[in-house]
Length: 129
Image 1: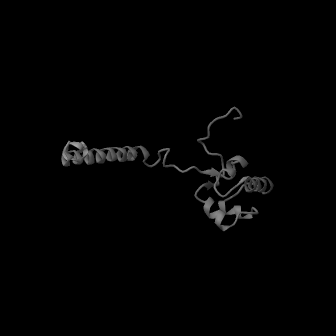
Image 2: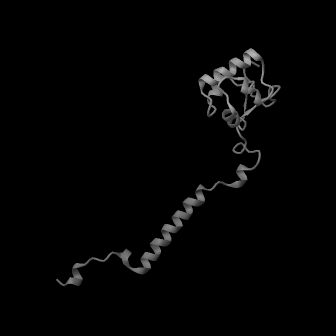
Image 3: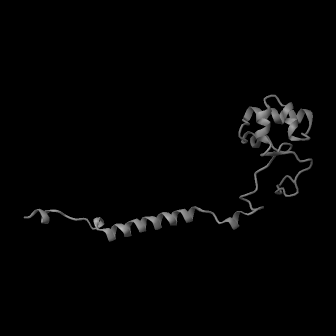
């Protein structure tokens, strides 16, 4: 046997095949990238994916409030207790009367919480209504 016949050559070593493999990998990566990009028309203004979740401080209970980042169950209980004792909040700034709510917490809550004077019209009807 000669040295030439002992060697097994892979088809991937040949330049035309290497180019094809690189092209296929590129096309597959492009397809994955395109599949991961969202359709901008489905997330326009007012669509459910772009509207922020807003929690009304005068309507939310301890369960809802405790889900807010930076507000645990203890602080949520204090907020509800303060609301029960002193009445509804007139603004988000009224949260500073609650023990444990400082400037940092208040700033983080501004984008998540709202204060409505009356219940929203778009409430989901329940059996209690």
